[in-house]
Length: 183
Image (cartoon, rainbow, N blue to C red):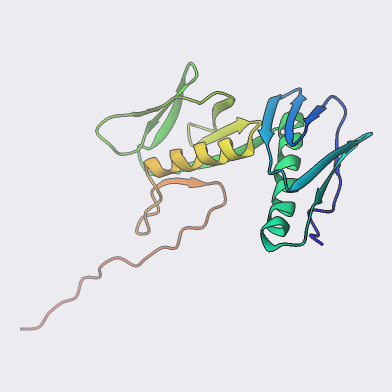
């Protein structure tokens, strides 16, 4: 039995869950999410929690069991508290600014890069334009937008300049060393 799949998902106050077969709709203070799941996985709502069960012990069904429970839990957490990722900008002249809802990143190119937030995503720039905070209710969308922004200028290994996740360690390489040749 899946250790994660058999755990019940607690529904916090202020969150409503609607089940229509294997189509789940979750509403909360941070937004509304809906998703359809595989029919081989059973989803049941009891009082203040959701239970996920599987129909057989086949390998692909067992794989879906824990995944379905994790995705459902992320949906409930997302509409109640939300998710956020923080990116850090390092480098001389590298910065991020907000112009309305649009994020403008200066990252060493000849032009600034404009990033428009998709539906359900918010940007926030803090501490001297060095940190970008991405907030939203859908964990997958928050992670994908953060990865797309990081891809604008990934950290390079020689000087460490670029956009990185907060706390990300970048392996640094030694540059060329000058040698004197006798000749």
